[in-house]
Amino acid sequence: MLRTTIAPKTAAQRERLLDALTQIADTDPLLRYEVDSITHEIILSFLGRVQLEVVSALLAEKYKIETAVKEPTVIYLERPLKAANHTIHIEVPPNPFWASIGLSVTPLPLGSGVQYESRVSLGYLNQSFQNAVMDGIRYGLEQGLCGWNVTDCKICFEYGLYYSPVSTPADFRSLAPIVLEQALKKSGTQLLEPYLSFTLYAPQEYLSRAYHDAPKYCATIETAQVKKDEVVFTGEIPARYIQAYRTDLAFYTNGRSVCLTELKGIRPLSASRSSSPAVQTAAWTRCAICSVRLLDTPQQRRL
Image (tube, rainbow, N blue to C red; front, top):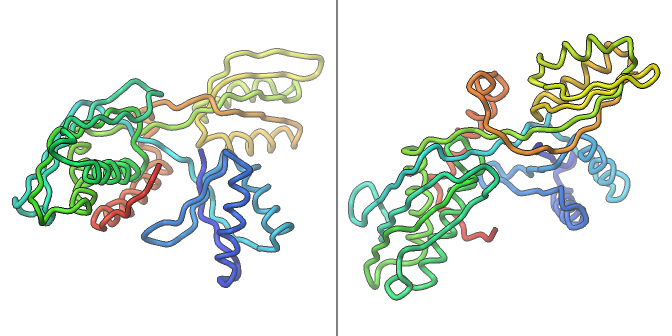
């Protein structure tokens, strides 16, 4: 739901940091990390800021590694808007690879994840080539059009052509994400954002302020109860606003409020919300990185 970059304050401790993160991630399924293939930064994905604080403290106390982290950003997803397909043919410029690939993209309902189907016979294109296409598609799905993972769609491998003996699996692995990118451009994608359910506890005198401030953070209040001198609200809020909402609550209640959250699900980002500076900055930053990555030859990787 959130991501940030993490680095040791002493460069010599980088390998120790990676080893430590591997051990921590093995015991915490909500924590993941990866090394960016372009910038070589260590990118940490986690559920909430408290989890990040716990990880930082654990690294310092148990592993004796002092770290520096940047301000976390929300992890968005992308979903295709309509069915589309694209084919790049062998020996047709600017295709530099000894491969032809045709892919189709079909959107699926929210929460469906990614489905894949090959309609190219194994009798024609053997398993090593088929695996290479899947590797390339995985890589392309990680980039999306704005640099976020693509989800809730079906990808079909519709057409493939190779020249024996010059074509190799590497040609198909390299071409597949480029074909997928073109298919996604025809389809277009919408951004999806994580939503949180929250329970807010605050002194009763702040009932009106807490209720009327919620829309400023795109939050909706679903229930409100008064218990003695305390008011309890439940509702939903986009994950990107929760920190600002909590900070505001703590300020005007003089630290006497508590806001508990849990992940509710993923929803499309509305047009008005997607125009916010924070979302545009995140999208264009990821887009710039993505455009560089797709020029590189993707390495074989597993999900």
